[in-house]
Image 1 (cartoon, rainbow over the protein chains, first blue to last red):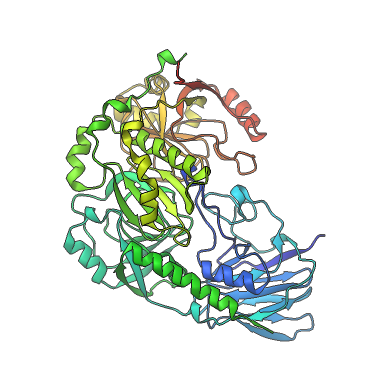
Image 2: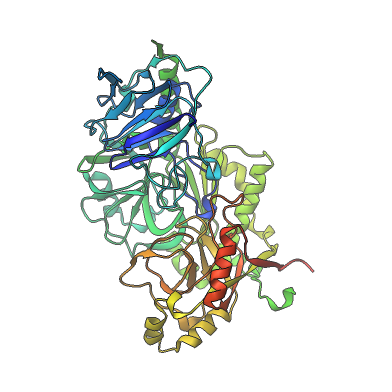
Length: 319
Length: 275
C-alpha cells in the first residue's frame, strides 16, 4: 500500500481543508477552505509545504491518527493545546503548538478535547493524493465535495499521502498570534441602510454570545433583537466570508467558509478578514463585542496582519 | 429559430435606472448596488416593472469585469458574483484596495453601452412529474385548486430563465413560473430533499443538485446531474441560461439518470444570436 494516513478516531468534526476554491461562487460553489487561515499557512510553513496545502481542520478535538512512514507534523491555531504522540513501545511525547516534529510508522498522534480553541489545524508534510474538485482538496460537507467523497473524516479512513523525497527539518514559531480575543472589528454594510440608527447602535454596543448553532456554514449569535426598518428580505446578493447576516428574528449569523454564495437576508456588517482566524477559534458560549472601522482601515489592518505573519515566518527558529 | 423566443430589451429602461452605488463588504468585497438597496430607491425600484432588467444588467457587468480581469488589465479580483439587482466583487486587500477597484471599474460602468443582447443557451430538461416523483403535487393541486395535469402543463408551457445561482453548487434560481402556480415555500421544510427534485415557490423553479434540506414544493424530478465533481466541467447550468421542461415517464427517467451518471448531459440550443 502506498503511503497513507489512517484516521483512528475522527472526533466530532474533523475535515480535510486547504486554501479553498475561490473563484466559482457564481456557480453556487462555496469558497470553503480552512477557517483559520493563519493556522493553515503557519502550519504548512512549519512542515515545509506550500502555504495553502491540505491538512486537518479539527473542531473540538478528540482526534487521533497514524502514519505509514516518516512525516513532519505541526499543530497550529492554539497557544496551549497539545498533540500527544505515543510511540510503538508506549513512550509518550507531548508536542506543543507551533512546533514541527517528525513522526513515523507505529506512532499514534492524538489530541485531547481542546481547551484553548474551538478549532485547530494539524499540518502534514507532503501532499494528500486525493481529488481536487475546482482545484481544492477542501471538504465541503453541505456541497458534498472535496476530502474523501465529500464527507467529514470518520474512523478508519485511509488518506493516500505523497511524501516529499526529503523530510523537512523541524522548526518552531511564536504562537502568540493564536491567542484568544473577544473584540472583533467590523465594517458596516452592505445593508446598514436597512436598519435605523438606534438598531445599528444596539448592534455595535451590545455584547454577543456564540450559540451552539455553529458549523462551517455559519455561526449564530444571541443577544438583543436587532430590528429592521421594514423587513429582513432583500433581492438576493453575493456574500463574503465574515458577513453578518440579520434574518427576520433579529439574531446575527456570521457567514463562515462554507456559506451559501448568494442569499436574500440583510447583512448589517462584516468581520474584517484579519480577525476571522481568531473568530473561528471561539467556542460556543464565548462573549464578544464589535468595533466598527472603515473599509480603508480594514484593508490597512489586513496588510499589517500579513506583515505580522511574514515576520513570524522570518523569525521561525530551526530546531 | 430566435424569432419565437422572447428576449429582454434592457436598453429601453436604462435611462430610468438609478446610478449604481458601491457598498463595502468588509475588506474583501465591494457590492455594486444597481438600485435595490437604498430605502430611498425602493419606490424607484418598484417602478421598474421588470426587475429582471437589473438581473440582466448585473450579469452583463459581471461578464465585462470578467473580461477585463482575464485580459490582465486588473489584478486582485478573486471572484465575481452577480445577484438579482447587484454585483459582488470579491477582492484580495493585499493586492488591491476598494478605492483602486472603483477607479479601475469606473469606465465600464457606463450603462448606456450595455445594450448588447447576449446569446443564451436554451436547455431542454426532461422532468418526471409522476406521483412517485412529485410528493407535493397533490397538495398544491388542492391548495391552488388547479388539477395536477394542468399544473404539469403550465410548468412546461413557458421558457424559464436562470436569474442567479446559489445555495448549492449548480443550483439556479429560475424565474418565469406562470402566475397561477405562484405559492409560498412549505411552512414545514423537509430535512431531506432527493437530488434532482424540481421545486416551485414564489415565481421561481429550482432543481436540487444534491440531497439537501429544502422547503420548496416538489412537483417532479429531473434526471441529469446538475453537479458532478468528477466531471471535467462539474457544473453546466449558468446564470442567464433559459430552460424548457418536458414531461417524461419514470422509465425514461431511469434511463436518462443512468446515462447521466456516466457523464451524459441534456441537450441545448443557442438562442438570441444577432441576425
